Length: 410
Image (cartoon, rainbow, N blue to C red; front, top):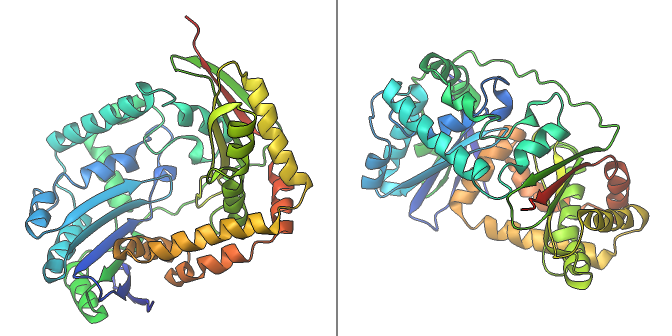
C-alpha cells in the first residue's frame, strides 16, 4: 500500500492511497475532538454535533440529498476521543463529496430550529439506550467508578440528560468554532482517485477555510487506583449481571497489544477461557465477554457477564478472579497465543480489502502518529510474548472496579 500525504496551508492534513480495483471513492474526515474535550457541566456536545453536522451548512441546507443524487452514502460516529465522518461516492462524482464535507467544516447553518430538532433526537436516543433499555446505564455507573478526575468518567452520549436539554445556541456555536477546524482534522481519501486529483480537490474546496484557535488539550491524569471500588444496584432486568473493570495503558503504549490479546484469550470465540470454563463447563454464566476500551488516554480492561439461574454474583466474581489469577501465575501456551495472533492477522488482512475501512484506519493512525503504522499492526501483535502477557496480567489485575447489577425482586 502506497500512502501519500499533503498538508494544506490552513493545517488540514490529507492522507491518500489509490485503490484501482473499485469504481468508488471513500472520504473519511476525523476531527480531533470527543467527549473528553467537553465541559463536565456541558457533556454530550461532541455526540450532539455528530447529528448537527447533517442539519445543513453555510451554503448547503441539506447534506444527504446531494450525496444521494450523486450515488453516495454517508454516516458518522463519535467516541470519547474523536468524531469521525465518512462518505462513499462513485469516482466520477467525487467532487460532490469534497464540496459537502468542506462546506460543513466552513460553518454550520446554526438556527434554533435545527438545534431543537437534533437536540430532541439525541435526547430520545439517550432515553432509549440508557434509561429504557435493560443494563443501559452500566456505562454511567462504571465510568465514574473507574475515573475520578479524567473526563472518561462520562460516556459519549453525555453524563446527564439535562446537559443536552439545556444546550443553548451560543454554547453550540462556540463548541463548533473551537474544534471543527481544518487544523484540528485529518482527511483520508481512498479508492479510484489519484493523489494529484485528491490534492487538487482538497486545495480547491478545503484550502480557503481559515485556521481556527483550537484550545490546547490539558487533561488531568487519572491517578493509579489503590483500592477496590464496588457498587451494587437493583434494576428491572431479567437476570443478575456482573461487570468488572481494571485500568490499562493507552492506545499508543506497547502493552496495548498484550491487553488486546489477553481479552481475546479470555473471551474471543467458543474455545476462549471464560466461555469454555465458566459458560460451558461450570455453567456459571449464560454469556460472558471481555473487551478493552482502546482509548487514546489510559483505558479500561472490562469483563461483563450474565449469571446463570441459581448462581450468585459472588460465585461469578470468584470464578472470574480465578481465571485472571491463572493468567498471573502461569505462562500462556504458545499454541493458544498463536491461535489468537492468527485470528487477528486474518481479520486485519480482510479489513484492508475494504477501501472504506482503509480510509477510516488511515485517518485514525495518522491522528495517533502516522498512517503507515497501520501496516505494522500485525508485527506488533506478533511481537507479544507469553512472558509479556504474564507481566501485564500481574501489573493490571488488581484493585478492580466491580458492579453488581441485580435483578430487582418483586
